[in-house]
Amino acid sequence: MSWSTADIPDLTGRRALVTGATSGLGYQTALELLKHGAEVIIAARNPEKSAKAAVSLATASDRPAPAVLDLDLSDLRSVAKAAAQLTEPLDLLINNAGVMATPYRQTVDGFELQLGTNHLGHFALTARLLPLLLRAEQPRVVTVSSFMHKNAKGISQADFTAENGYSKWDAYSKSKLANLLFMLELDRRAQRAGSNLLSAGAHPGYASTHLQSSGPALAGHSIESRLLAVGTKLVAQSAAAGAMPSLYAGTLPTLKPGSYAGPSFFEYRGAPKIVQPTRTAKDPDLAQRLWTWSVEATGVDAF
Image 1 (cartoon, helix red, strand yellow):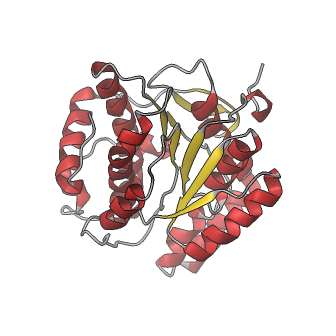
Image 2 (cartoon, one colour):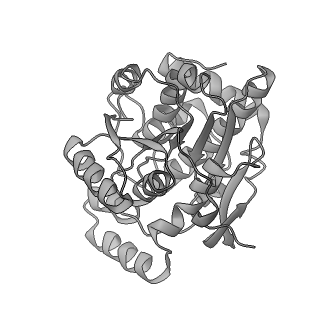
Image 3 (cartoon, one colour):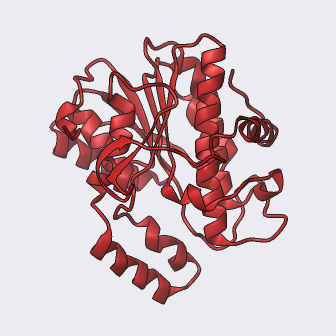
């Protein structure tokens, strides 16, 4: 039988934080968590959008409005400030936010924007929230990747600053590879430490969100942006459907540590199921090197 949101268990008493929850996948993920009784915190960089999303989520779920946390993943000081504001145990962290195919830009800390936001920001956030996660009975971290990680043949420390040149889609693919390398290494470290933390991954397939066109739009490529928007409308599944693998990975009681969830139909659309990362994503030596580089870049560590 296909898994659906009807299979999500009662989440009453569980506290979840979802990054990038003002729209798209994050919004839909937060909505279902609220509907099933969870206390939800939405973390995003635009306070006005966050406030509007909180009201919308409360109305749509018929639940109390989620708490709002100001968080800019492209600024490590913002990550530290956001994490410091939380004091209660955290049951579920969904590392969902991201940027896609942007023109070359740097984060506040001087890293290439896509790797700096999609990977380093979430790496630092997870590390800083780890004490709160470990205070929960069955803590879980879900890191959202993409089938685009399959296009990345590797990653190096030089990619953090695009020292060897920049290609927007290559950088995006590497950031999504980094997400999976991090997810699996977090699982290995948690298990070695004897922790009950469960680390899992998910990807939405081809889902209709603003990401497909926002990157080209930033670069002033209006034609590319429009073509991607049209293609998304014709081919992609909805954001609600794209959020299903994240919800599956975040709530399935029998999920095995290190699992990776994606859509069932050629990983593009459909009900969620367990899928496989590439061999490169499962390389433990590369994952350890990435972890070391990430600690050096962010100044924080976990396990």
